[in-house]
Image (tube, rainbow, N blue to C red):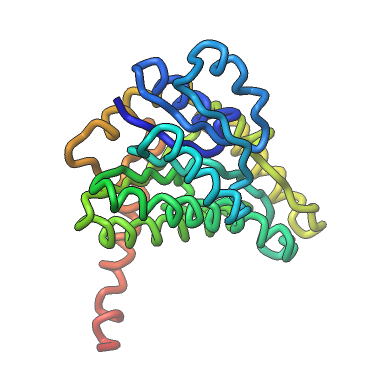
Length: 269
């Protein structure tokens, strides 16, 4: 039996994974800004679920929530930094407040949760921190630069974290989903005001997002549980066919670019 602490559990992956963990007999501290969507899980699973209202951008609230969860269940085995959203807008369109808000949630939020949990996990000598990144955490597309930038930042810090805490018996994994039907494109999305110079670009981006793969998020459960139960889990797990196909092709192109310009690169040494 494992004890989970999951952020962003009111919808999408967060709620699906919360339910899956409870159904297999684990216990979950489920956090969200709005707890009403979790009422059905509370009714069904009773004391196995602890719901905590939380905005991950509030560092003090995060620290209190992690402490409450640990005190309630006696330990924390799996931390899932899932809370986040996507902001769509071309770089020239982005306002300062939009940029700061995206990073406050997608980057600072996971940092606050991780910092709060690490002392508890070090004391246990075990634990698994999972950061939910994205296909956009390894690639970037026009109109999604702010979202990608936040996920690239999460990727870099999480990779460093894995090296820092390995000696304490703490595991770290980045989950990188492709397109899933999680509500990301609707309630999980915010948009900048369209600049006249980018009207056509927005139209193309809208069509791209509307036609991108939208796999059933329920199908992600077994993959997540396999990683959580693994003795030696991966640092990165691509989630879904789209992520695998796109990333393999992307890295092949990147390596080809490196090779094409290798002579120039080496000439700079």
